[in-house]
Image (cartoon, rainbow, N blue to C red; front, side):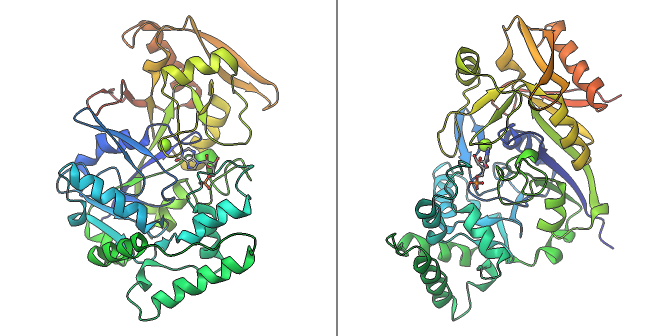
Length: 391
Ligand code: IMP
Ligand code: MG
């Protein structure tokens, strides 16, 4: 019997809660960090010795020597993006190839998937990241996609050509994409990496940290459909994306920002505009790490938060970016009302995170969610981190 125990880091809002940093802070205690969904739409920003690094495909455990980083079956993977990232890591002195492990069930993002997002314009309203995520998952579910486990088949190049031609024919107005050398170099990289049957490989370890991408409110089922991504960003995605039994899930770390951001279209009940929004964008550096777009900003939404906690079975909260709000005279929090008419309360602002008003804010979140705030991120780097005693 496997004694596999899986702890999960999940975003409770619309992504960009700071999950990458939380994973980096926790990863040293785990032999494996595993991504279970999403693809290069993710942008996990980390600071390695004050150097900013953005990871899109590689799990955020990569900065810990001796930690395996698994790209689990629920992920869609762009070989060109992975290649670029592995090269970038090499320049930082990290040989990712030795510790990267790829599930055979991971599906490939082909150049044609990115191209579909350009020619179809179907993602424009949603404001997708244009990384081919939706088209790659659509092919996966339409059962014409290409899993990583097929790259060594003799007919693999033909399958790539066929799928490309299939989509090119659907959009005759566009100029069909060519398969670049970089794509095949990316496939060569995949051939060098360890490819595994996840259901066999993962139970060899006792402890695994599952790294979520995007956030609960972007989940294909549970999110604000159709303004969502194409994968299960919730705990449900961990079970299917890593082929693990539900009983193996132990802690579920729910990550929330002290305010809210959203990139792309869709409902956002606590959104603020004008100078207020600009203040948060500037102070919080709220610009998409994948697309460079300014993030929409708003207040913390306890109604949405309770929903996210409920469906994920969150056991501990991690609060991030409260330092961004330092200096505001009051901080608003939505505590009820409808999405069209949210009801807020105003809490006293804080000058620093040592200010008693900040402790009051944390206590307020704990009361409203009935969960402990287990840790607080106090800045961007790994050491900007406070752990709180659990009652
Ligand atoms: P897609 O995942 O590129 O298909 O984009 C679908 C929606 O999810 C868009 O609104 C994106 O802005 C949003 N999204 C996708 N990935 C992320 C992320 O990592 N952080 C925040 N928003 C994201
Ligand atoms: Mg991000």
